[in-house]
Length: 443
Image 1 (tube, helix red, strand yellow):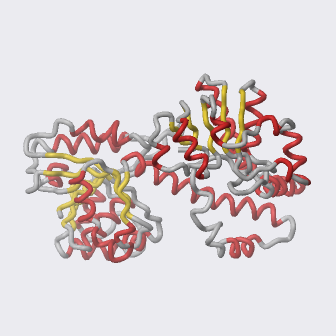
Image 2 (cartoon, rainbow, N blue to C red):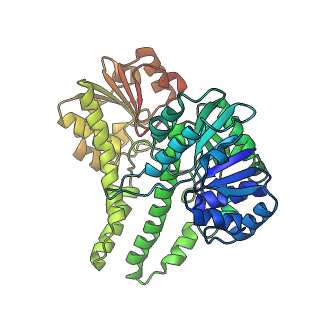
Image 3 (cartoon, rainbow, N blue to C red):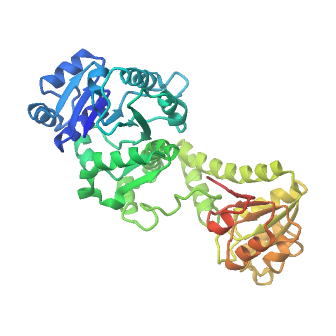
């Protein structure tokens, strides 16, 4: 395929040289004549291990060139990859001026350049951009493409780390294509088909444009959080003579819970007898040492905001009669200690809502010890709130809050179809998700 790569910074240079190395005809486009001259001389415009060799080989083989002329780069080109900078503004917003300029130049060049043989050209953003950029900034530019051109837009985020970007290019964690245009998706599969050898077909993820745009932010925020988490724990543990690196080495050996998808599904708040208690204990240890632990403090604050958000969404419905399906902090248990559902029920009752509760496991007569004490303090009239089955809880309900979606709860929801269904855990299934009043919490 013939490919134009806009922007010869780290991402653009690695992408251009990497694609040329697997046989694509690549033209790098950059307004900086110094970068263009460096590529023409067989040198990388940026310092990156292994990249000079790739650029040299691509130029020597005639598959990699560079220019400042957008018209020349677009001549009979199948794909344009936009790899321009998207720096922060003074207020932290993403600056899209370089992206907008590249798109405008690309559109103007289509008036002059010869279209590819297929007539279809794919404009693919690789730069990190906010969700909605494709719809607001990319697609509108090409709605009136010149005769002979059909244009599809896509987001294909990169996952390159400086210092090992060449290795990352050939062994990415996955390839993500976000587009609604089938021809553009097919072009990207052809363009990056060489990755099948390393990541397999299952490593290709075809998603919506906004999902692809959001993914890079999610990844980088998580990476930043991991660094801060490890360092925050180290500041606390150091004061107690603990080797935090040894702690984290063992921590990372747990691929069932710690380094795993577990707990990374958006939904309702955490709770139970362990997480809240131990998080508070860590914060207390930090205070004893005079160590700031804002990440741990923010974790508890975020959890509080999740519960508050559900309350506000219920208030926003204008309803007064609420059914809460599931009261324990985890399905198939009767542990009510620091359950976010108990907290939710308490807040709604305090605001004057009529709440009926059904939990398939809970039997108030069998509660003992701290479990009993907790619910007596928070919901002293629990017996009056409980329904014997989900149908009884849902009778007359205007809003169903579903934390525990057992089979009987699903059947009752389908039979009664409450006007609003707030799915707190995201496991109700497609039948209920298709109901008109369904809303997911956390997504």
